[in-house]
Image (tube, rainbow, N blue to C red):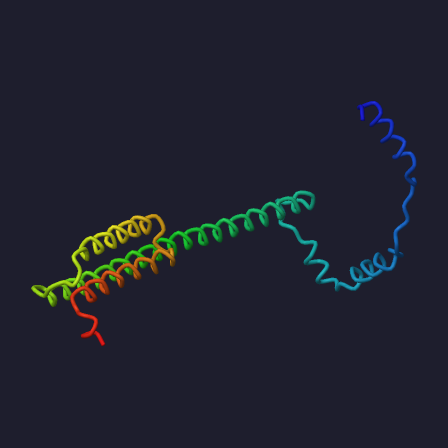
Length: 184
């Protein structure tokens, strides 16, 4: 639609609108109620409501009050936002530290168990020849998971995978050195 046609069409639609619009209900009851309520105020309340400081006129008091109220509300919102964002960053930082501590504890426990098993089975013959290659593959997988945990330390799937890899390594060491009949 071109601009002249649009303007002509708009003008026709505006002319078709009714010139007066009647309210859906009688508004005088509300107006009378408000006037009556104002008249019911005692003289003391009305006098206190109209008291203004000597240096502020009635015309300037409302904009000043609204500016003060607006500034107060803005400052409260600002303080709330700063507290919320600061709390979020502290919480995120605290959770990251806790995750890193959990990973370190898990790794330390695994290493101590692994060392105990290797000392326990030192000098005993292994029943397979390639068990150290399998152990190295599992250690490489654990290193890859550690690298992924550096970027997302709270990832529960990665944590479960790391724990599973550690358990597989310990089970491999035990199975290689203990014959199946002795395990039963």
